[in-house]
Image 1 (cartoon, one colour):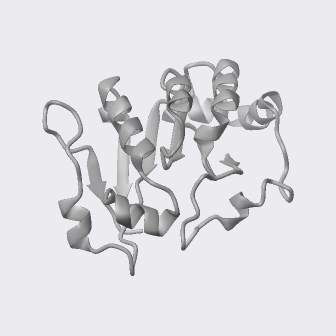
Image 2: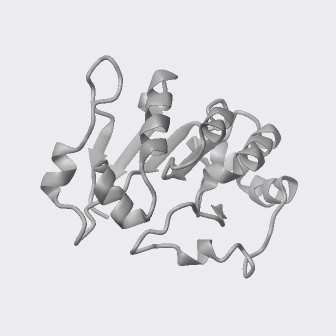
Length: 176
């Protein structure tokens, strides 16, 4: 499920259609989406699968996702693909609802992040810490992409922060 609306203005946006406000795409309410996806319930239950919410920025639709969880129950796996550059209230609402988080951090260096996205990364760092503090480290896949012209492999490796008291890194460096 892809949502519209995105707080960043990334130079090489992979989903520019998510910035148009959804004018060209079908709109769903929670029940309509549930009814459409429910046909795959046996498959979800047999494989441990479910629904991935992406976008745009799905955290901005935290209320919709919470209502969807009420409809589908706890048996379906719900995954969120996010930048985490949203208000803390969205993450708080999603913590009991989402099973796994795929987090795309464009870069941990605040200057590179702002240059590439047009926004600062303070909310990203705050929300990463919140997830770790709430015991969700094992439910996170954090990706730091190589963005040609903005960062290097060296930048990515030296900027991967340690979040949490035990010193474990929660980041995995990937090429996008």
